[in-house]
Structures are given as C-alpha cells and as structure tokens.
Image 1 (tube, rainbow, N blue to C red):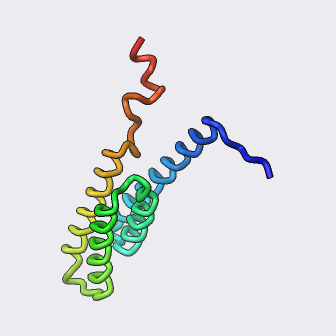
Image 2 (cartoon, rainbow, N blue to C red; image 1 turned 90 degrees about the vertical axis):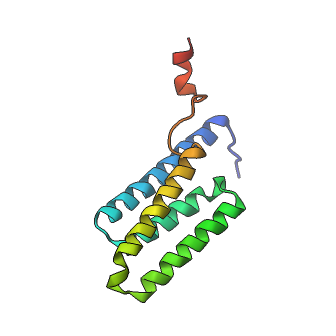
Length: 120
C-alpha cells in the first residue's frame, strides 16, 4: 500500500476539516433559527466532537457536563423549560464558537500564507 505524505495533503485535509466544522456550525444556526432543540443539540455535539482535537481535558469535561445538563432537560420534555433550554443551548453554542475561534479554527491567523501579500 502506498503511503502518501506531503505538506499539501496535510494542508488540504486541514481545509476540509475546517469546512466540516463550518458546515456543522451552519447546521447549528439553522436548527437554532427553527428552535428545533433536538437538532440544535445534536449538531452542537457533532461540532464539539470535531473541535475536541483543540480542546484541553478540563474544557472537554466542562462541555460534557453542559451537554448532560441539557440532555436531562430535554428528556423531561417539559414545555415550561423551553426558555431555559433555549438559553442553555445559546450559551453552549456561544462558548463553543468562542473557543473554536480562539484556537484558530474559524478565521485564518495573521501568519496564514494568504496574508503574506500584505507584508510586502
């Protein structure tokens, strides 16, 4: 079996990986707009799993606790909890987006080759 290793393939994989995270975040946005809590929750979990490569263990534990809290509320299926559930899902998504941004998984960093032309 051939072993294909190059900087180009790693770069291409990174772009595809970031596209996947972007697609997942778009799905979160879509389900949030519909107030479809189950779909929103599921896509937040997917986005979280995709981003765990950049998270520290305590952050992963914190997110897992937040997800479990939301899952418990959804299992109760109490319509009176909808506003609380909405707030918790909002908080979770904002927190996840901020961490993904801070770890350079949303916008390219200034050291990205695309910015090299600006340094001339």
